[in-house]
Image (cartoon, rainbow, N blue to C red; front, side, top):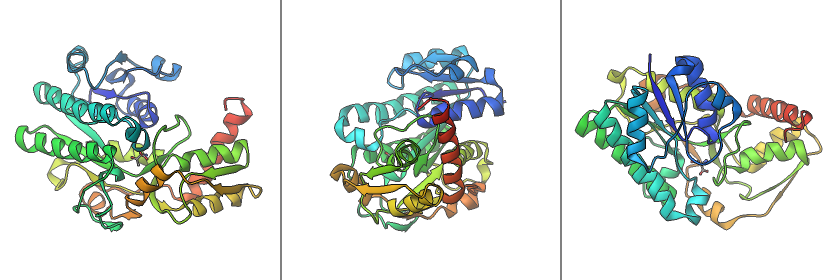
Length: 320
Ligand code: AKB
């Protein structure tokens, strides 16, 4: 049975991944590491909780030793748009933090999961059917940290034998914890706006296609990759994974089928638009399919039904 530490357990992915890992590996075997945002009651009461910061390696070592951790999921990062406002902080968490965790893993025999992103690509990458192995020259600080994280993770595997594995996540759509500061956040916000106001103003232009994925598939992908037979892995850091690709008009039409009064207008944010245009329209994720059996379960229609149902229930309970 794995003994896991999640760094960044309170964020969009961490808050759901922690609970899922506790179901799979036993609550006592999954430590939720948090830094500044207060953990939810569910997270705090369902298993061990420790204050850990990716930029404080001594503290990471303490927690790793205390719980005899053998696997670290490093989810600490500043998302793409906020990283453009705070590039120094983004570097500190996204590069120094990754380096600290890899060093702790090397010294303590831990495996490491690293979430890279479509942000690891840039304007000179082929944007359609983006290959697994291709040009990676991102123009954002977020992208720079993700490419550095991929390279460092591969280096630690090849040089020291640390079992590092990673995914290039697309925009993740979820209904538990809001993202915050990402370029793909619009695809979450539009569902909340549909339930609350039946209208949404989109910061990206019509025709801006991006890869996306529903949270249950994102969680399955991380768990499946970390359980994959290492003998089958040709790649490590990081695998392209996608579940759907759409532009604002396509997601709007899917919502409008369920909420006919829904309205969409545009007020383009030049920073987010510039970032989105430098990211793939649709990645080729065949390496993940071949090497560890990646196969997403959720498409746009099924995700839209579920998102509107769950957010609608939250609204009825007065939670949003
Ligand atoms: C962002 O938009 O910054 C993230 C990502 C795609 O990595 N959601």
